[in-house]
Length: 121
Image (tube, rainbow, N blue to C red; front, side):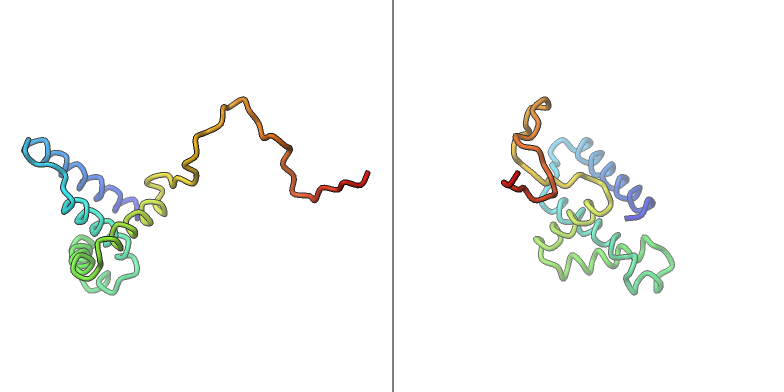
């Protein structure tokens, strides 16, 4: 996502938080999560989408693309694509290893080398 799109995304998140705050009975729902994902995906797709040049503003084009995503994509695809957009945009870290971390002072058990080991001296 571009810097402008990141700002739009943060504005959406702020509006959702304010709505949830103003209505104590309202919670962030699955529908909200799907719509947010479709919005993020649409912003990313906008860069190479034919609608980019057909509509006068980015916001109008993104809204049309978002509707296209919501009506034609399965929810799993929206969720997966949203995660990919976030990773590619540097908006959150990709977790590579879920294993507990080793103590900082403990190094590798054996030296790590790119070369082959030889048993011959």
